[in-house]
Length: 182
Image 1 (cartoon, rainbow, N blue to C red):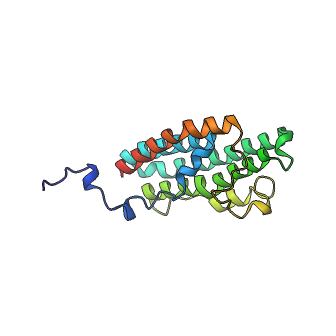
Image 2 (image 1 turned 90 degrees about the vertical axis):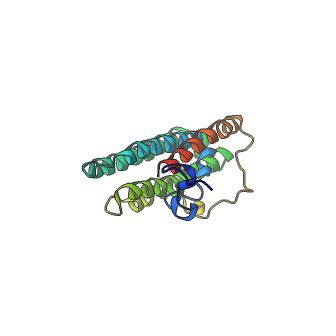
Image 3 (image 1 turned 90 degrees about the horizontal axis):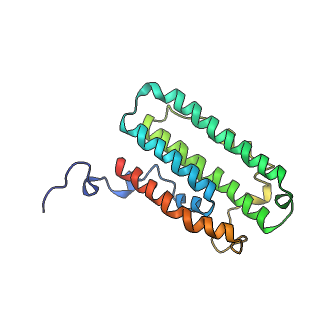
């Protein structure tokens, strides 16, 4: 058998070490198009920084990532406060809570793990403080328990179906690019 060229897929480390920065539920972000787009953009930034990880970028990038995620939380709060449908116990409210939970449980840890994969454990921000700040308005106590895959409170909404059909390819492409770059 011929030896694999450096940088080729065959030369990559085994999946157990290559994807240690990849959250096991990353593809669940595709359920909500805004999270999928944000995740793709963040992964694209990490792929670019990974090409030449200048140590001088560690602090500014960490600060900008924290501000970006904080801004996203502000936007989620604004959407929830401005929509009467999200204030009740409707299917849309349940799906919005799921979106918030995916943000907290998947997107934030994914961002932290990418940052640490590039700059080491010295590059971190207060991810737990960011997540804790989502309670009680964005992550109510009853939403603390993860939903099972069988619970699909929002599947009948055509916008969600359209978003979940369109977004998987974009995230999967960026994730594949991330794996190839490492």
